[in-house]
Image 1: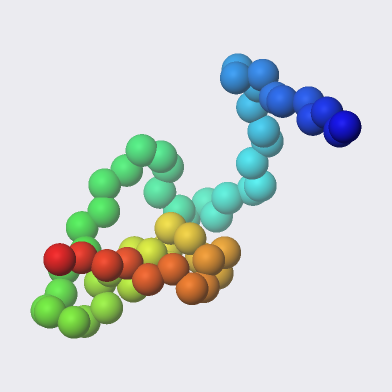
Image 2: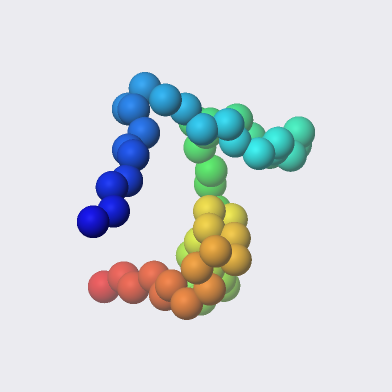
Length: 60
């Protein structure tokens, strides 16, 4: 049986160097455009990049 060591809740993971022009967290973002102009796709791409290429947002 394998045992896995869990991280402590207060332990932080060093993040990679961020773009100096990127906004600091937390921040607000306004995306405006006409219907079907790709607003949601742009936000998903900004948040996830190419990590999850097959995620499709669905709204009703």
